[in-house]
Image: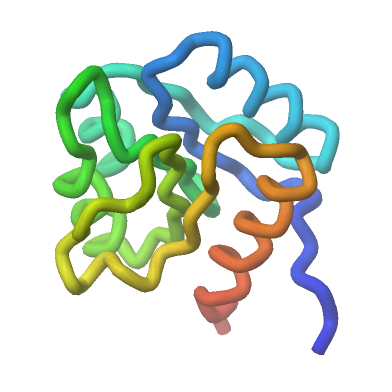
Length: 127
């Protein structure tokens, strides 16, 4: 099975830690992705998850103390692949979200690349 290409993929970053968001942007650029947008607050993240055009999203599980599962559900409703990012483990997400790839913080560039490939490969290409 050929490896899924990440070059040119547009990624939405939803992360409340600004230094981590900047690190994600750097990693994404190095592996050939484009940043489609970024959000650090729940309402902004929900709006961007519903309206922006992107190939995959990276979603922090805990946004300033608020679980981001409703944002994940909005992404799933759009059939948009996403990755959960967390430093705490994934505490009992709704059953419909349990198959999403997990990016455990702290992570390396290769961990991000693996999770992105997993998320993108899970969604069939449009015909």
